[in-house]
Image 1 (cartoon, rainbow, N blue to C red):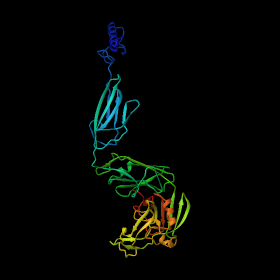
Image 2 (cartoon, rainbow, N blue to C red):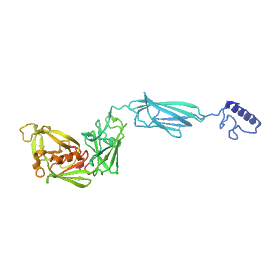
Image 3 (cartoon, helix red, strand yellow):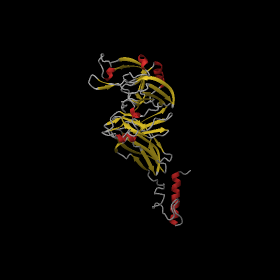
Image 4 (tube, rainbow, N blue to C red):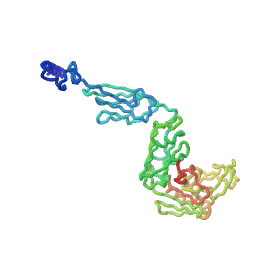
Length: 413
């Protein structure tokens, strides 16, 4: 049997002889085209010529300060891609080859301050294989900022958790953010059902987001922070992308009226309880350092921050340290549902049951009968609402999740 080369050589020989007689053209050549002339598919030696494979790398060869958020791409024309590897040391970046084998795209993330080598195996139209290589270097920032998701400053936001209708997403950066617009652009919040919302920076590291009204029961909230490679200002870049999600449970709202000394409790819009309470007694004094102190419960919607079976409560925490001061106290309190960072709770107060429903005598907390405090402790959770009314001191936005105590028109920037 003749080899492939012998067959081709024989064909060329015949074609050459015929060409001398002036009767036919070379096999596979265009009419009027002579062997080995421009337009011929044959070359001296008798084998077809293959067009070289053109390979394009992105990022370009020897590129520096590449953002790790940028994709790596390899494309080929005049042939196909057989495989691609992108490596830095012993780390390999994942990727996917298109079905037509003309383009490869990275699916894994890059890292800062690394030199990556791209190795592409390609094949031309005849099946001949070759390797092409390229390299690039990612930028090395002065600092990076990582992300944590908070329910509030006292509790992390649990992915897949269920929270009350007042639970807003809180994104905490590990470093101060000077380019707030860049950070906000990287944060994508989606809700079902869809609602619009606004960002609010509690401080240089803490970003809040809330809609105009409480979340509807059954809502689902998704938070994605695409911060890798994002310049947050002053040499700080986002360390890595992060995401979380949570759901909203029943609508639980306790409305505390300090004039009537009652707490009306609603679940999904229906009133389920009417509890007698005692709120902050009011009045003013000074701490040991001379700073002003008042004993009002703050007005406005409060959000439950945490629940603790027992809390040591002492006036020394806000500056009243003299045991002879009539406002001094240091006690262990039970069934505590915290609603502000400054120390407001709903809790059991069996020592002043005669005052519940009649007068305000606490130092700022909401005192309840033992059975009522237990129901509150067992039923309310993070994100549920305690809305206090009719006191002269308004809940500030920084004291717990005071976001809902601020009008939507004034919220944000």
